[in-house]
Length: 281
Image (cartoon, rainbow, N blue to C red; front, top):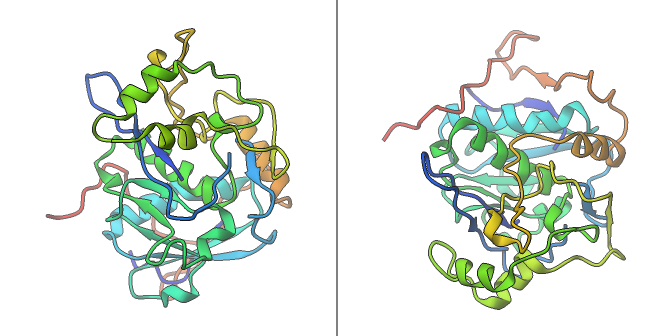
């Protein structure tokens, strides 16, 4: 499907790989250089888009079927938050005119925070990376897309919320994250996992263990063996808070707003492809 003119209402750090029939592994992606990142409903006060904005989202690359599945999953935020995404395919919009730039050939899964997506100094080529997301199982595909678009709206990591209740098994985490595929130093682990953000520049609700912004951590990562769940869809708190941050939608009843591209009959947008789609080799 041609992406030009497609409008959808609404819309860094850690990623999780999944291995079939094996324990889930934890893989962190790196924050863009100089990107100041903080943590459901934990969010940056200074990174919100103006309410009611139409955000231009440019796919730098990617096959049409994969791009359409991203549109499908990202648009879930639009049922609750009062923003509009307008998606463009590769070459359909000058990168400097885009608010959010997505690549499937980047370095893991990550996104700049909110309006930081427009900062070309911090993210010169793209502001969101969905590296080979089509290789994930359908529910993991959805999780990664909704998580990273949550960042693009200003949401931060739940496990670094000032309301956090996780009791980390620190030495185990340091050892685990130093190995492939992460190769993280202790300082990197402190920054990306253990650091709790200052509540003077974040807003947050109570800790939400069901948040899409909370990463999966296995029981061994905590001293009480609880770990965190593998959340693959928006929680009630995620939905409620995005509606408060970007008010104006009838939360829970509104449908994602999709406007047909030029040349396609109005009111008959193409149905997004299944997340099991694979690009041709």
